[in-house]
Length: 76
Image 1 (tube, one colour):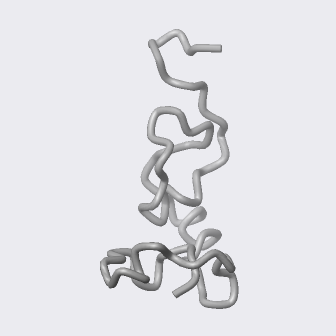
Image 2 (tube, helix red, strand yellow):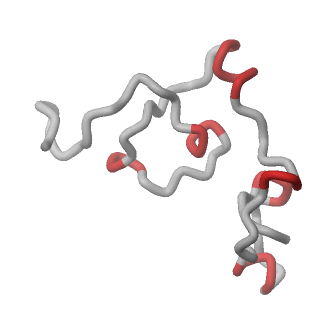
């Protein structure tokens, strides 16, 4: 369903961890909160560490053009 403001999807009160990392690709279609992190949320969400990266290889890193560096959720 659409929100009353137009084409945006209603947002949950839960912060979007990808937005906080600068990597959310869903934009207005993301169902999580996109706001500047407070001190409380900033301590909850940390940059992706090597131990939690996906086993899926980063297609941009394979071509030496990944701009995400340590924040990239994919395997380097």
